[in-house]
Amino acid sequence: MNSICTPKEALLKLEHYCAYQERCHAEVVSKLYSLKMTADEIDMIVVQLIETNFLNETRFACSFARGKHRIKHWGRIRITNELKAKQISSTNITLALKEITAEEYETTFDQLSERCWNGITEKNTLKKRKKFCDYMLRRGYESFLVYDKVTLLEKEF
Image (cartoon, rainbow, N blue to C red; front, side, top):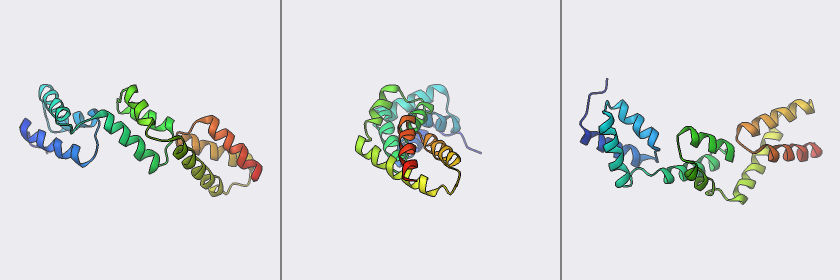
């Protein structure tokens, strides 16, 4: 069971928490609630973290977008939805999506779609097409990109 800690101890814990990896405001507030802090203490600590630059929502959004695209190969739609779920402002979401260049996005999309298409062993073309589209849409890629690509891949198939 968590012991109740002082605001000063909580601030130190949260500085380490934010220094370890970029955090959004919602994660920090949630962590503070788990440390049994009051609403006033939470507000005070969040303000201090922002002033000392441990907490920066724009930096978090940009880092999140870059990481999820480069490591998990997510598309813009999935990244946008995940950032919205973390209560990130639309201004910061727009800035974050600019972190992914058009060339990088296209290259990742092409590599992922080729790998996916070649990995589906389904013999029935319609079923294969559905599996491919479902997978790429779940990854957060735009439907027009997915449908153009599946048409192109089908012709080679």
